[in-house]
Image 1: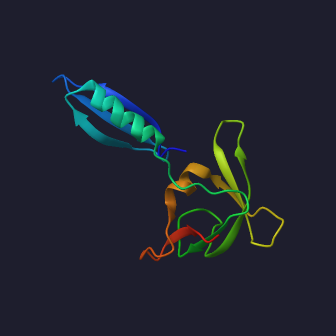
Image 2: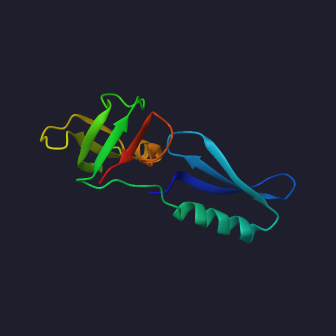
Length: 130
């Protein structure tokens, strides 16, 4: 899964090319401005293939602090299931590490975007344990 929902090359009034990425959680990021359309297309292609971290079924994640996802309080959770809704949105089902019951379901793109490393200094984070 790419960090961007969509990546486009746009030609501006001065005949320069801008590469723009639309983020999954909303917002726009300008990835560069180029004189050459081939360089702009190359940058766009690279941005489409750059992947963010992705969780798999059975992975254990740890939440520390408050990460602004409903019902994902501090503690460890297991990815019980992952799938796609009828509207085409990928999701993760979270359960306690040894539990069978799904506690909460969240948008996979938003979770993947917020994944951090265990050694990150931020006190509010979510990271993969195993």
